[in-house]
Length: 409
Length: 190
Image (tube, rainbow over all chains, first blue to last red; front, side):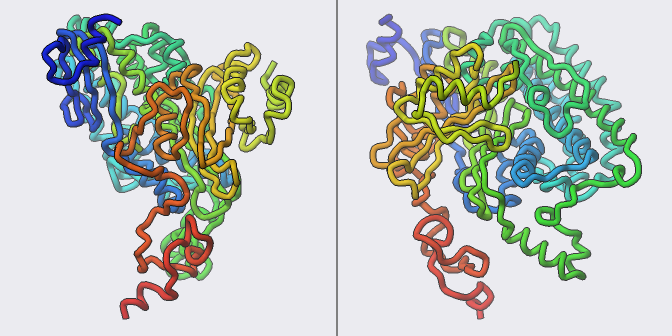
């Protein structure tokens, strides 16, 4: 055992101790959320990093065991709150898989637009925050305007911005209005220039490259063993993307590339996220094209025809007996589900967001487990930062896009 | 050659005989049970054999089945063969009196925190785990909250009685453990 390790085991405050203990968190500007790292420093070098999570644990899995399906959607909002629509869609698709609901093509395309917009919102925050943590504030403010525009689009579609509760089983609660489509067009027109300028600020910026290259690197093999998914895994060179490997929601009809890195360090993670934003733009453009190509009834439908799970129009609820009954039954959660176990996953902002749903035929899940990508890859943090400098630890943290809500469930 | 459920099942039964059972395909995923003594051997076999190649541990979680005597707690592993996009679900059962299952941290580093989470919620002891302490709940907690004997809501509440909608009566655990006073909130307020 080396001297350093001997030092760590000494009690706090002992005179013989030659390392420094530093608390990063639970409320520290660098954590961007409520979690803690107890870091043991030898000078400025990290010899140990002990991660503590759970500060905002809200027992979602327990609560879900008493709730009906629609009452669980707002819980999923609060997992990765930087891209809540992705979680909502993932949850609704899980329910659809269990209930055997088929969605019309237009619903799939509308969903893809919402999902890719929220992926961009998620990635632009992560990439620009990395800039902030490396000392470059400008890029952050620059892209922030366009997150605002994305939130405005969500507002047009569902009425809320951050925790969206967007969509229903089988589709959307209402059709996209004209303003929503105009704003999407505006976003598609203006964002590429902004993203290009954002990349100009960072990609070949000497200071940024020095700060991020080689920091927090991980090999593809270790990343897989640690259960990495999403941009963090792809930065290590594995082209695993749920949208391609196990397509859902008609992703198989779309043409896009999977950006991959090679070293798995902070710079590659940054590059992969930026590359994905470009691909998301491509996907949204194709989806808009496909929407315009739809004809007849297909061009107006915005939900599947499933009266057992989809709320009837409000006007009918007040005037028709049948609609009133369904409305009541759905709201009270009186629809029994089929028995069975289903696992469904989607490519969320941070990687594979999975829902393991055990139904015993009752009104709420017997057991619902969320596979939260953030929680699973954060355990590699010690391995990523060990032996590096304290300032690297900060940038590694922001490059992983750790969202406390997703970690703690 | 595509990796089919039949082939996986055949390979597993050849290797482990009747220690693996209850093969079933549900919603595209092959699901099976294994004895708890051989959970690591099964996981290692699925991971290590070149023709199976389940080298990605997607998910690990616990489930509580209070009615299965001697097999009350389950640990569920979801493994993924990323190349072929095939998933399998392995369930291992243990009793609730002295729940113990071998840790998978030696095979998958990802299992570390997921096992801690399962321990935190269900009290399953993962034998050989390097650091089996609570992760999401406070360390002082002296029970395992995801077990079914802990109903979610305050038992003393009477304003949420709702036998008309399937939430009254029933067994001692889970739904309907509230006291049943017949009547609605509106009637109580009169």
